Length: 287
Image (cartoon, rainbow, N blue to C red; front, side):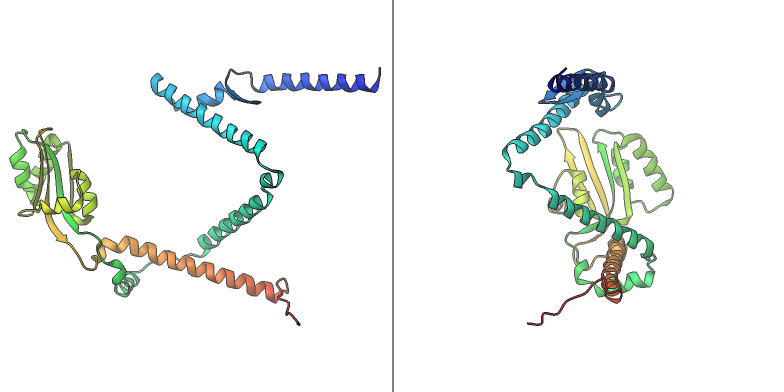
């Protein structure tokens, strides 16, 4: 037997072995193919959530197949049409690796050292020092909101009780809205952005504010037989936002400043330690 014959026999045996292994690993129905790449039914099934209706399953399956095919077609086309230099992504991968490692170490460093305790005095100091950045962009309100069918037998009573400050009247309002109102919420003790409230009325905040009369904002939707109403307990249209409204963002800002300071110190410490150990040297140009 010649060397050529032996090589061909070995190649055939290897190919047969690969086919057997492939069939064992993917003893599954192929649902799509792009070149030499195959999408198997088991992979497709794992992508579709359990309990999905047949119609939705079909739509999700087609979406996944198209996405899978597009990804492989892009890669196949790029491999064929880009030059050798354009396909060399070693530098980009190394840059991404370095960036990712740096980010992960920074997160560990911050998590180990960040002081998350913020006192009331620190909050108040920040609030006073950053008044200009805490100006209101839109009005804020404290309200009680209800969405109710206009023909409801409890319609008038619910609207009348929206201003209730507490006691039995407020309990009655809660009971009435529970059985009669598709939507109800009480934000009478916390500030709410006018733009957020306006979404409940399906309009913009300036149009909503223009409807404010005698502390009520009322929108009637005659085509749906529906009324959406809010009773305004307080409103602030401009100036520095109240402390209670911006406290959460102040906490975030203080923590962000502490993180930046930690990272600044980390960078300085790394440079100094490396210089002390002679791991980092700047050579002077004698010319």
